[in-house]
Image (cartoon, rainbow, N blue to C red; front, top):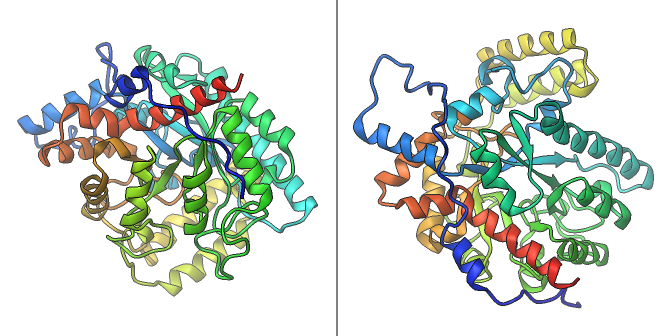
Length: 429
């Protein structure tokens, strides 16, 4: 196997980034109250201090699946929605309420058949998703800003807008199309993962019941990873098998990210990563962003009645992008009734914190962040949408982590990786 290349030596500028150079002091933001603030109980002094710090930091999440909602008929990012009412977890009002400055908005592609026809159909879906993400900034330039470089994030947030980086979850639609990898980069793609729930033509998945196909990356996957390095994109190994992770650590020219994963030593699930690999990730300069999807945090009781009811409901209404606004409203009404009849099993905030604190204890705050998988299954009891994000800051302060630590966790680490990817690509020119 031919290495993709070797990372450049750290420079003084990168050292500054690692130390938290991407922290911004927000200019007197006008904030909606959090749900905690609107309760009858006033904030305690520690809560108020944590909230004030949270607002000073640049707060980014590395895995927002919200573009799935952006393409729904009648759904607007500017309206305040509810996880209870329509299942959504991210919108502009709740981002303001929770102090979320933005993050990486995912072009997600479900894994389909390994045929040229299916891949072409998936490419059309991916093109529609990236267009919807870019439209956040073009349609609402006073509220969102498209970020193409690591250095763009802080000025966008300082202007009072939300940061829009673009990522891709599952490069399946780009299989065999290096021209499309370049085309998506030209439209703003800056983070890419090769695989999702099942093996594809690029790499093995951590969760394919058939087991490994390639025992890591395929030749096409190695070529795509090398192209991502050359362009200056961060490579994401969430959902990839352990063999893929090992090969990316060994051969990627720049550090990789796990954009929404967790530690296997807390909960033994193939989507999580063991402590030995977590240490290797950190030693290579990489970062793990902690996921908040309950099934990856702890063992949840099986609810076959709910599974069957969900399958029947989705079959009846079809995929969300194909529904009319009226059909979508009817779907949500039925979904609320289903949730009452068959409540979903959930992990809670302490389960999420256990994963976060374990990762911090193993590799330290310069290699850990948050990628909760909002609108993609993430969210726990006590943190069901992004309005609750200040709870994380409050808890980490109580655990003894400093403002510099929190600056790294909330954005500095992920931005450092992007800057290193940018610098490597520039060095080739």
